[in-house]
Image (cartoon, rainbow, N blue to C red):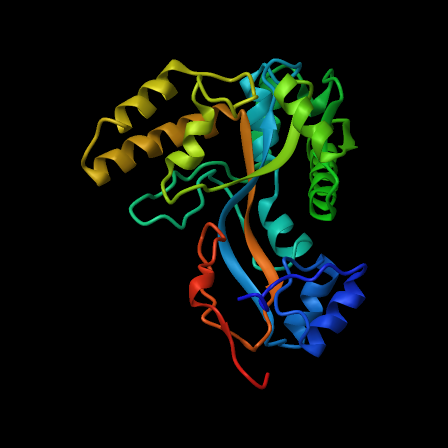
Length: 294
């Protein structure tokens, strides 16, 4: 067990040398530049595990022009999630039209948000901003991360090209982003949420009016009522159906914009045996061992 760990190294190259020599048995992650070469080389150490983690935007409905649900929905409909997941981010990530990842047994997310530029442009026109006319600049806030930077830049281009919106990017350290989120000092915030347990409520409880993690300014008594009702239902299928109604409501109102479902991309040395990933990315090290001679 002590041998299966991540040694601190001062560079990616040093980390790779340690891995090849057998000194390092697991890397926490891989930089994007290393993923495609490992896939092309069919590297046996490459692992891509599906996770219960969603990358998404929070939209601050207290900030102009995001008080208008038509503007929020237009932004959601103008996100080309397939391009982001398939072409910009290697490593098995998948487009997210819903907020709850489709990995839970017994829960089917609603169809959610799709890519529909015609509908997005129509909504902007109905909101009084045809072709983006009259809209103030929209600012995307994100913390220091190669992946978040690439996603923010891609969506900046999409919203400008397809909706005529002036989009500005702001990058801060994680602590500053967290403080800005709690204070409501942002317009659009890029981040993620990972399941704490295997139930849809680990995602959907975020958007209750009494949630300490909401931070969007959005609340809806109908959403709260659906959430409360689900908590009273003993029948799993009936409970899941009510939760799906709640998720459909928040996706339609669009205080959040799901972008992609994440994966854990890393190297695992062939000498490591008994390694079983979980959707919450918590492996049970009691059953992990090193095979001698490797």
